[in-house]
Amino acid sequence: MNPLLLPEVVHCLGNFLLLSSPPPRDLADAPFSQRTLLNCLRVCRTWNKILHPRLWQYFGNAPWAQRLSLVLPETLLKNAHHIRSLYCCPTYNIMLDLPNLVWLTLGAFPHNFSLKEDATRSRILKRCPRLRVLCWGGPEQLSPLLTRRFKNLPCLTYLQLNRWDGSGGALKRVLEPLAATLTDLILCNIMYVESAELEGLVLPAVTSLDITLSYPATEGVGKLPGCCPNLKELKAACDEIAIVFIYIRPDLLVDWIKDTRLVSLTSFMFQNELPIDSTVEGLIQSFRTLKIFVYSGSLTQEIANLMVGYQGNNIEELTIIISENRTFSASALATLLESCSSLQRISIACSIFVSDMMLLEGIFRGTWGCLGLKQLHLNGIKMTLPEMDQMIEPPSSFAPPTSTYIGLGWYAHTQETQEIQDLIPKQRTAFLGRLIEHVQGMPQIQDLHLNGVYYHPSSTPKQWYDHEVLY
Image (tube, rainbow, N blue to C red; front, side, top):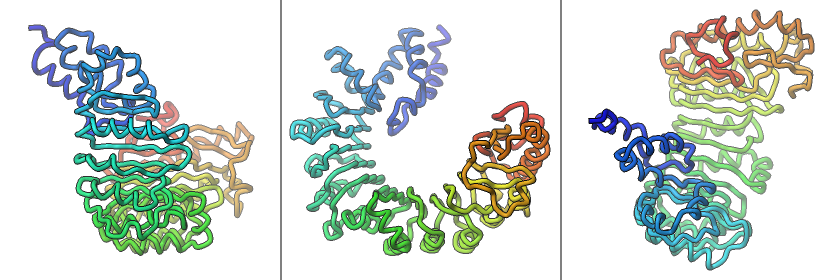
């Protein structure tokens, strides 16, 4: 027997080209490359027969979906039962039965909504009895959310709605038939929903909720967390109206979280920049157990102390985006690394200058207590030269045009090239050496990411200069 036809080889091939469940939205995220698949199809008839269905499984974005129009109708009809993921353009009138489709993306309309297009979309849903993931985009001009199409989707677990008018109880009528199976819900710019329209709605299976807030027009959407008694992950963003309200009343966001009264909620991600530091402090205190926290704002010693005091034994993942007009404290970062025993991943993206001595004396002042740390990302930090360390404040919070890349992921605020070269071994090696030394006792550390450069925990100073990426 040809070795390529051995059951063991075919089994390994099947594992390598394993179909993910649900399939990825984009072919680029699939567990194989299209070129690899095509090469495998040409090996022999047996491999072609085994792998042929996978050639049809993913049409997960607009360019791939448009290629369906180039296929002969009889060929498409013959292979329609292989399609698992499909991006359907607004003008693409698909009439096939897709019995095994599990992921459907209906693109946003570049023009006004029409009854003909609505009928086409409804017809697609009727022909997809096993659909589990549905992404439904609306037209540029806001149109009413029609609800009849969502009544016969018994397997749906993931729903994304983008840009619809959900007034008149439409949103509730969409969600009620899906309450038993829906686990992930994303609502982007669902407008004109009133709080009273969601009375009595219960979504017991939803554990992940992503919503866009708008006050007062869509205040009802803000009530959805209270409709999800088992909610674990909440991701929120504000439109232009809501962000104005939050800047006028910085405590509004904190009160919103407190009003949910959800014991199960352990993850909170807020996409807009928080107005003041007290909002961050209030959010930390609002959760009984906070394991994942993502926000844009400052990292001060007060924030770090509250995090340790209220969530020190709970927080596992922390992501902070610090803009040029906010504050970054190296000692605050050290407090988190020393005292948050459950911390596994921390990522900080700065847009400010931080001195070498601030990092050296601040971050490494004591032993880190997060022994389970797996990932440490410090990005956007722009280092200064020793003469600037003596200054009370850097001359500018922005990266000046004269800032120069000096290697190892660092930038310096100077034009003296020779001086830069003389300082690289001393300043950068001191910081990176201390960093590697601190993580030696952390067996799970895998990812050190400093200003776009990766460092392996077992690397040496010589390797830092030989390779920009040290994995």
